[in-house]
Image (cartoon, rainbow, N blue to C red; front, side, top):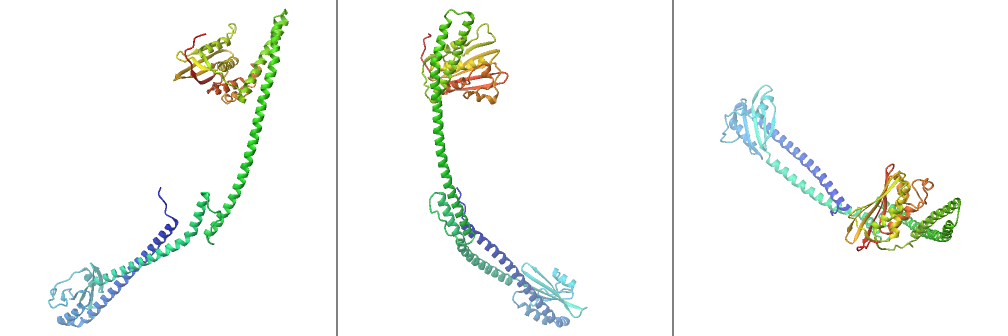
Length: 501
C-alpha cells in the first residue's frame, strides 16, 4: 500500500515550491533588468565616445591630416573593449583604423549599420555576435558631410559582469530558499502539531483505547475543531448509552415475548393433542355403535341414517387425526419409524385404493414408475403413505375431469436413493400468488374449497412437515387452467433385496 505524504510534508513542500517560484521570478526579472540597464549604459558610453571622436577629427578630416586622425583613433582604440576604430571619408572609404600599418586604408565599407547611418545621417548602433557596432556621420555643416566614424566594441566585459550577477542572484536565491525551508519546517511543525494530537486522539478513540478527554489544540480553527469534536464525542457517548439501554430493554422484551409465544404455542399444541385424544375415544364408540346398528334388522330408511352416522364419524375422526398429527409435529413429539420397504408396492397399493370406481370414470389415476428407479428403501412407510395419499387425494378432489398421474423418477447414489414422486393433475390450477399460501396451516387457495370438497387445510401442511422431517420437501408448480404438479423429493437409504410379500 502506497503511503500518502503527511500534512507537514505537504506544507513544507508547498512553501519551498512557492519560495523557489517567487525567488526564480524575482531573480529572472532582476537579471533581465540589470542586463538591459548595463547594456544601455554601455551603448550610451560607446555612442558618446564615437561622437567625441567625430568632433575631434572634424578639423583633421577637413584638412585630410591622416596622422592626426590616426592619433585620435589610436587613443580611442586603447579604450577597454575596443576592437576596431575607423575614420572614413564621405565616400565610406577607410582613411585610418588607428594603427600604424593601416591595412584597411582605401577600402570601401558597405556594412549595414554604416549604410543606415549614411541614409539617415544619424548615429546607428547594432549588436552582432558579441560585438557592439557604432556608426555615425562627421558633419561640417548641416548640409556638408566630411566622413564617418565607425567603432566596434566587444561586450565580453558586459557579459562577464552579467554572468557574475546571475551567479550572485542564484546564490542569494539558494540562501533564501534554504532559510525559507527552515522556516517552513518550523512553521509546518507549529501548524500540524495540534492537528497531529487531534489525529492521535481520534485514532485512540477508534481503537477503543486512550483517554476520552480531547487534547488542547489552541484557540485557532484547529482548536475550534477540537471543541466541536469533543461535543460530537459527548453526543455519541450519550447516544451509545441510550442505544445500549434500548437494546437491553428490547432484548428483554423479545425474550419475554418469545417465552410467552413458546408457552402459548406449547399450550395450544397440548390443548389440541388432549382434545383430539379425548374426542377420538367417544368417536370410536360412536362408530362402533353405528357399525353394530347396521348389522341389526333395519328398514331402508334406518339403514341410511346409520350409514350417514358412520360416514360422518369417519370424516370427523380423520380431521381429529390430522389435528393430532399437526400438534405432534408442532411440538416436536412426532418420531419417524424407519424400516425397509418396497416403494413400488406401496405406491401401487395407494393408487389401487384411491382409484375411482369403474362407474365413475370422469378421472383416471395411474402410476408411472421408472424402470431404473430404485424401489427397496428404508423409511417410515406409514408417513410416506400419508404424504402420497394426501397429494393424490387433493389432486382427485380438485380435478373434475381428466387424469391424475403419479410419476416416480430417481437414481441410486452410493448407498442412497435420490427420489422424486410427482403427482400431476389436469385440474383448474392454482394462481402463483396463492401457491405459497396453501402450505400454511388451515389455509386453502380458494376459500370456497372447504365448502365444495371439504377439508381443514391441514393436509398439505402436515405432508410438507413430514417431508421436512425426512430430510426432503414438497414443492408445487401450477398453471391456472392447465393443472398442478406437487413433487415430494427426498433422499432415502437403500435397503437390501426385499422378498415380495
